[in-house]
Structure formats: structure tokens, C-alpha cells
Length: 71
Picture (cartoon, rainbow, N blue to C red):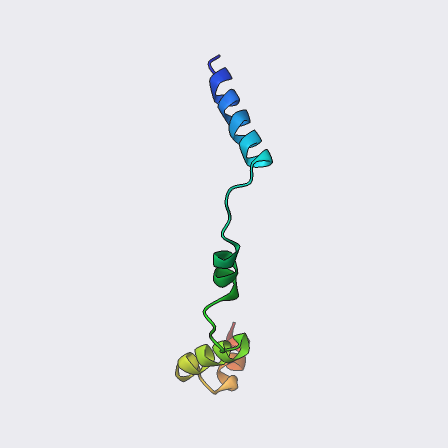
């Protein structure tokens, strides 16, 4: 028992959301979704990350092969 008030409140809120649309600033939404105007493509961004960590990788593919054989 005691769920009646909570359910009534939820129903009231749901009806308000369904039938009364809030004031939406569509220009602000478009600016937010449009991004910051940065002209860096995702591929360039990924390349920058790879370049940043490239010094940590080893160029010896033989190390991987020898490790697999030892296992």
C-alpha cells in the first residue's frame, strides 16, 4: 500500500511530458550538435593518437613470434 500517490504523480508527469512540449531553443541545440567548428577529421584525430604512442611500440615482429613459440 501507499503506492497510489507515487503512481498518480508519475502519471501526471508522464501526461505533461506527452502533451505539453517544453520551450526548446532549437538554435542552441543546433549549435551544440554542430560541434565546435573544428576541422579535424576523425581519421586525422586517430593518426595523432597513434603518433603520440608510436614510440612505445616495438618494431620487431619477431618478438611476438618467438613468444608464441615458447608458449
